[in-house]
Length: 150
Image 1 (cartoon, rainbow, N blue to C red):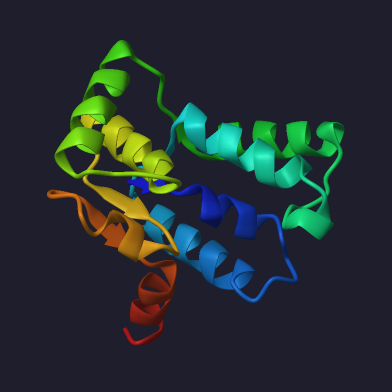
Image 2 (image 1 turned 90 degrees about the horizontal axis):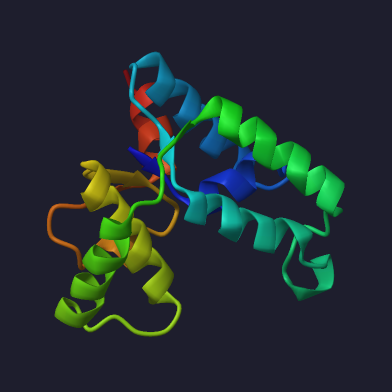
């Protein structure tokens, strides 16, 4: 399962309302021996948000603090590698699904998922992945809710 960047951002914001649910979902999935993965793009997107000033919707971290967080994420999740096949798969996806604008980044995540044989993504933005055949977008709120009702 790929972990979307929005989950990573919430994990390091302990006072954000979605922080706990993101952490609970990760904990539950790990307890089920789910393989939770990142691709380099996740960490690039994370860096962008983490080091952007708060007043422009970032976290305002220093580069030193952002580096620390990235190194923690690399230790906690399985980091899959970039391959030349990701670009070719991304290109096929954006043409086939007529993807434009910011959704292009999600298409690239889907391309990496396909290349690495992943079929699900943990994300708060499930609608962004709905268009892709064979991709299950899992909302951490649903994961956490299911765990509470067992």
